Image (cartoon, rainbow, N blue to C red; front, top):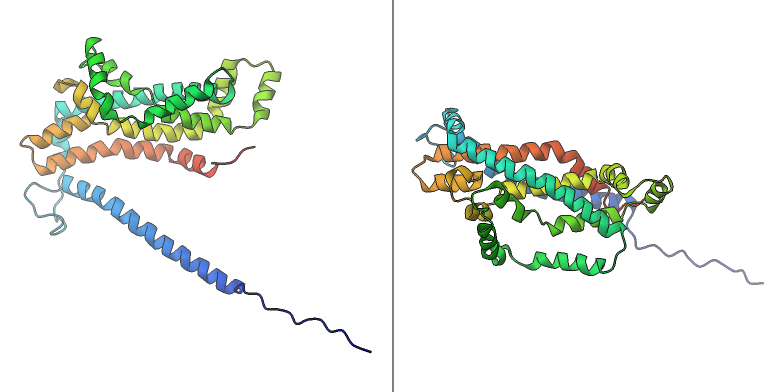
Length: 291
């Protein structure tokens, strides 16, 4: 009588759990080191600007040595200058009005493209996106000629209106609204809600993360915009902060005061990012989720 024996168990080629954990922890450590180095290279220029802004003129400073004396005369001199305050006000008007209008129009257009069916909607959307491939420099002269014929040179509306058409914002809003659960819109229709009610009470509250994200990027883009304000603002009173700082660089202005101006111009960007940071994190965390 023959006895049947089970075949010997073959060893698996996968490493033990302890070795996998070690490999994963090693990869995480290297990733942390790379992120720290990237953060250092990003933050160092900002630190240098602020250090130079509070350094007395003519004193030895970085990269030779760390200044041993601190002064705020440069900052006070910049803030007391009437031109700098006027440039800052123009930049705030240009940025904040553009953010409000772009977010509102992009949310409306995104809702229409995502939830409404009308002939040629896809063709219109992709045609709108095709404008992203057209460089700004190619439309600069025709836009300036059009605005100048409408007497918009050296005016706020001539500065703001030509930059309000943002196809990228419309596309992002369309994709986000398209990912919202259909049951929410069906329930709103069953309850008898109209289109404006659905938009104001359903769509806008649910799109706060993407609106905050777009608000950050639109504000930074307009705050740092240089080419269009340089062309359309031809007087000192209508210059934005970026254009004004470039004129200071061309004049006989000390390096410390120039750095003080640059440091002050960065503060609003840091404040806006700090206030809206939690919405930015939420939008990244919920990307790809659909109820």
